[in-house]
Length: 207
Image (cartoon, rainbow, N blue to C red):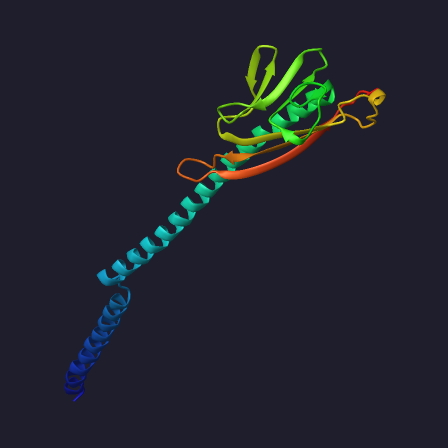
């Protein structure tokens, strides 16, 4: 009787074990299917979005670089022009015998050249050259004060007070310089226009 019962229970236990193994295999297979890679369409979409973003970023970066180059070019030209005018006014302040166009003459309406005697006793003339630059002439020596990137289209000197007190002029000799033109803003870009005004009064006593 006991042998018969054992023979009948063995097949059922064997079936249960097979079902359990099948269930474990099914779960393992389901887990493997859940971990999967990207499809071709997903990769194409991702690459497309990345390309669009990089194109926009590159365009903005190039615009910033061009704007920076333009600003640097304009700043270089303006700095050169400012240095030239500062050199002129420094020499004029320590000079005497102002005149426009020649020493000892006023030009309240403006003149194209200015002449004075510097601290070394040398006659100096400032004017605009044919190459649209500010030039300094000492006797026969001519020196260009501005860079080729600066184009001076107009240079006007307004001089007053050149006469002495003995002649009834009690004003201190003074010159006002007005320069206008354009500054290069880099290759392929239109130049930037400018207008600068400065002045100088002699430091010595005009008696």
